[in-house]
Length: 388
Image 1 (cartoon, rainbow, N blue to C red):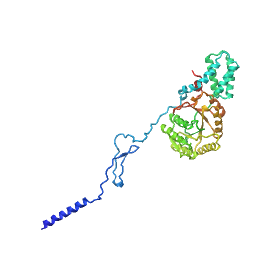
Image 2: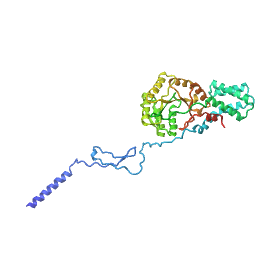
Image 3: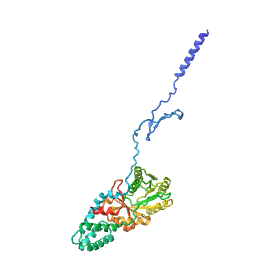
Image 4: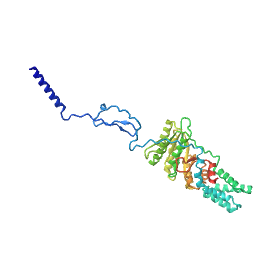
């Protein structure tokens, strides 16, 4: 009898257990999801809906190289630009292509057997056509007439040397054209870049950053042109290529505050040089020019401004001189950057703008390539004009 009761109990337990196992609505264990790769190339595990942190297990990093996922931009390779030394000599051919007409015309006129008044007038007209300016052109003609009379007979080599000496004298071989970009004490050098829209100001900031990186300087770029988002984007692109940090603000932000922050971060990061791009001011807009003065004053609360570089388009010729005058009244311009000099035969603008402002041309742009900005050197410049 006891055996029968035990058997019945076992059957009842088995039935109840089977009913519990087959009960509808029992939740199944969440399926394992394979790891997904992020844009940074690390593995993460996708959590199923309703899962808790306790249900997750640590995921080992994947072995072997990871290809970037679709839509992921690869990290650009940091470039090492060439040093500034000898750049103008390397770019001489580009300069010669635009300036040779001017040089050949002068050499041809001076090589005539007889130099009468008409010939000297032609020489002066050629100098004026190259945007040399009236006073420098007349000075060159007077000096050349005197030397030709003393010399008497002239060989082509004599003529070239005479003209070369006069051009270098007018350009000014004794100007201090050094860029003051060295860190001093606990402060980086501050370079403020100003100019009218369309002169290549933002591009100049990026190229100057490359020049300094090529000279083993640590550079920070400040995008204080907050009126154009494209200007800040452009600076970020330049900085990324050479590993330079870029400080930017929101579109429409106060330019002075962005410049202030750039200098602050430059001090904290212990960089050598901070280059600040400013909005392309129209020199006829008094309010905007006043704002440029404000940017400079705000920056100087933290560090001295070592350079104020005025960017001028060489193709505008004498029209650029009016711009230069107004900028010089607002900020203390310390140097000129002449862009697009390879696109004009009016190399005499170098002389005219220096005479107008009393400050030297320090940099020249000779093309659209990233390394086409060069320190200005009078000798190689004149040699490119006159040819071999």
